[in-house]
Image (cartoon, rainbow, N blue to C red; front, side):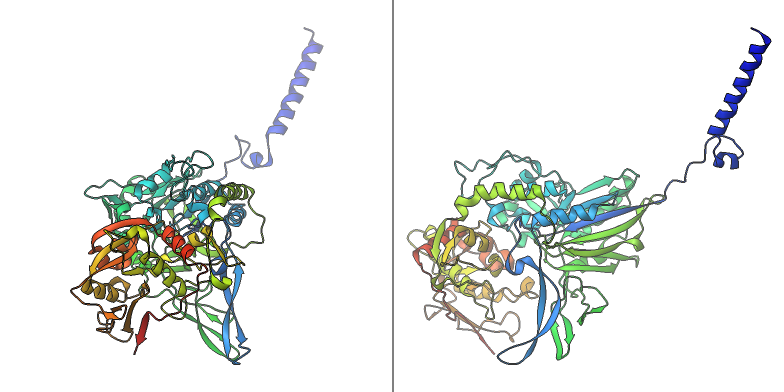
Length: 628
């Protein structure tokens, strides 16, 4: 090679090396002295996590109607046109429906890298016919679709027994026979594959063992290394509010004790950030609304409970001191960072000091999918824990001014087609087409009387030719007003909305002394904080004094059957639903009944009676009388 070619090659290599050096040396490299790559940015020390939560959905796939389908946002002062008196009138906005809930949740997740959607029980059970007719499989499929990550179990998840709850969790079909039995049909649309989210039951175990019926907790590990555990529980008092046959062989443990025992186990797994999903709740205290012409006692709007502000004349409220969730929360281990609650169907965002004196958030999002709670929190990636002071929550209204979620609309359409023949069947008429309310100013209601009369006259409970003489109906089992069609017709769908539990009607023997005792149980024991006045059948009457001490409310000698005083030592044939028959709602006297005969479904008794007495004229007799 000539010297000229050597020179050209050397020059070319020099130019190439210079160019390469100019490309690879960034300003930062030059500042660093030209040694190696730019320094890596420091790893983040914290992560932002979003929790979206709700509770007590109760299978409300379609937008709920009436008072169940609105949220109170405030009050206005109005004047009665007849009396001239001023009053506080609630300002309500329509809310709820899974088509809207799914859309709101999607919108809320936007822009959040780490987001979870969680629930605190009673997603199924006491559901409208659209879900209940298919063993609540449609609701589970709706929850799968909207992206639910985890839920606790609630008391209504046991409405069809714990084995059915386990099927709901894992999938499979029930053989309901051709066309479905008891107006229910499993896997009517397709094979049910179960919940895609964990259903947690930390405090429910097989009696005599430590084995739980479902997982106690679920741990979510995010991509950035953050770990959050969710402990799920139902209320320990579940046995007193569900049918006992469905939970036979189970033990329900104290909520706080259960959660606290799991904390060390979670710590061993490297998890310090813990959220409790518990199906127990609180009750907001009455507050005041001040306007131009006066101050009025009102129920707090959806965003007022535990607020210290006065907004638009409404003073912030607090949870009542006897709220069960407060006792649970104050006993929870300080390592637990947040409590998401339910059961009482109330909206609140509250905080309470844990045993170490640090504030801990407690939330509840009303019911029926009308609200969801959005909680933002900071996770310390070095300490592997939630920064407690960062936890902030807000209840958000599920308004109906957003686009419907297409997948939810399709699901509802499928099951509406399948349920139509059951729902539309006319079972009777109400004279004048008037609505029969479930509640009223009096302790009795026309709807309560109708249901009690239907159960008293249910042919399926006649035992050896002896028919029930008296029937009792628990007010909590009457879930909605009876709303006939415009022409007065009542279809099965309307009746099922009133009584959605598929309880059986049970007849039994009770002595007069037991009847007196169960009447006193309306005001005493566990019912003292929230009185439960049983609805009674025609011919049964009594008087009570609200001012008398507990245990002596019933006026002696006033309890009568067809005008004849009930004798303490005489045996009477009594009918009640299977829930009450087991001593439900803290009426222990029913559990002591003898010679029990399990009849047909309560909804069938209702339908048969209405058919036989159509057009039904609402009864306004005074079966229960209050005296000073």
